[in-house]
Length: 349
Picture 1: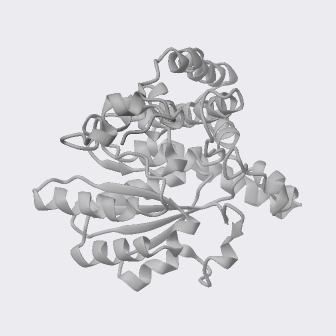
Picture 2: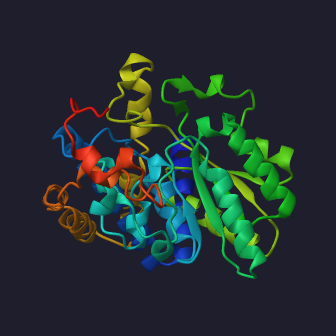
């Protein structure tokens, strides 16, 4: 028991040291960003249950690694999200209804890529990795110090795009970070059926780049890890593979039922380490915040999403003719607005 108390005390002191090193203001900004992401995720699930948006991929428990990755980079750096990072663009100032409109199937759900330096959400697994490498390489060829970061899950490391992106990035020393969140499940496929390596970070050795591991529930460790890798990339030393290790606390998405393929007890155990309450305790312990300040931060995040449902349903749905408006330079007759508006039973000779 005494040994356990010693370890707990050492961990607490390490967190206090991390907060002192990065400064109280940044520590609070990281907490606020995590709360913003959690509030968005919770509200999105409610909107899906109400039929306001379609199926939605939750990210409960991944707030630390997402918030840290955004704040550790410069505003000009590029982010290449997957469907699991729907809300990271809101941390760069995008209104929350924009990414939610995407899950509503509305064309207004596409943010201004050049304004926020966040690429469109990539739903196909791992196809954002080569995009990030190309963007990073292109920025370097233009003499810029810009870094690109590509998000992915443990399952994405089984894809060909992951291999191609890592190989090219290492060969040309592209200033890109591959941030792989290892939550141990790719839908219902456990990690042991994805790979034989003990650590996903070990895969970096095959490409000649550093591979590092970090606790995905520790926002301070994630921030320092991404910051260090980004600074290395800016110095012209090439890419880094970051494996953020945690656990998928909830379902893969709103259409998934994880109790069908894994033991609920495991999630309950990991849930005791989830990042937001863990960070809140660390901030109070370090004397950076008290309960009142933390409650205010949560309240502000809730206010930002309070009427988001109204902002979604008040946006008129486009006409069916919009299907073809941005596809062809010259719209063929078969896709003309008049043709698309005709009843299905109408035929032409």
